[in-house]
Image (cartoon, rainbow, N blue to C red; front, side, top):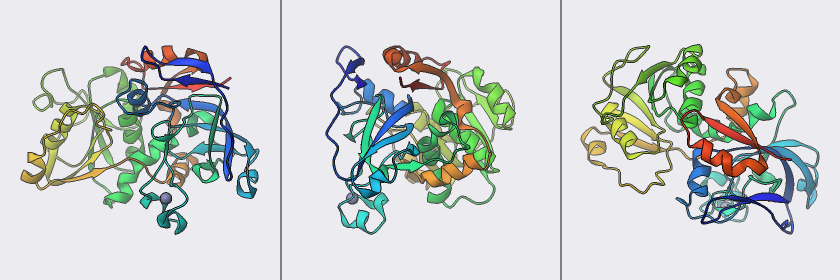
Length: 333
Ligand SMILES: [Zn+2]
């Protein structure tokens, strides 16, 4: 099968041997896989992973080993962003989110989806209804992560939410919270997000390259508050963290959507000084994300900018770093 390998001179597309299937596994023929910020961390070796990258996928199960896996053959599925080991007490009790040995395709322990096929346990994929396209489904794990703040922090029915960062993940979070009825402001640097955000009644505060904390200018549209009770840090940069702590209300909550893979230390003094609660968001319930998209609240495909063939993956990774790209996807042969 064709797939991406990480190489010191940059990622390459190669013919790779297919792994031997084990009991309970499905083989998914991949239709589409996104290039997320997390995938770029892996490809650029900011995270220690040497297998096939690719953390999101939509595809069709074409083989299964064992009764539960075989029963899924022919189903179109989306991958969970992570899944439990299946062997420990937490996994056996149905609480696999508590598993201390979670696996993340394309990030840790399991080869990912920037390839023609992926091999994962049957509980690592979720069947999709017919009405939702591949484009609308491939970002569901990211949407689930962004939206998990509602569950983790017991957000009130209405509040102001500030999202710092206008990359793909920040935009997806903004669309999800706006669709859920929250008043959302995105703080970003890229004017080409205006049309999408305005269509969804999301405020936008454009900042310049001045130091982030002082750069909170009045928005190009929508008000800029002095402080926000809930702030989502989605920049992946230390300056984004500084801005989050400067702009969160005393006693407020900062959600960390960034992987912090740059290994730049983030200061914590303001966390204590302002009595701030920090909540890390790495994964969320994909069923909840599926319900949001199924209800037609908004289409995650709006955040996909370009589609590339698998053979063009090295070019796609390079382009993904450009500001005009939000989230590109790879389409498999
Ligand atoms: Zn486990």
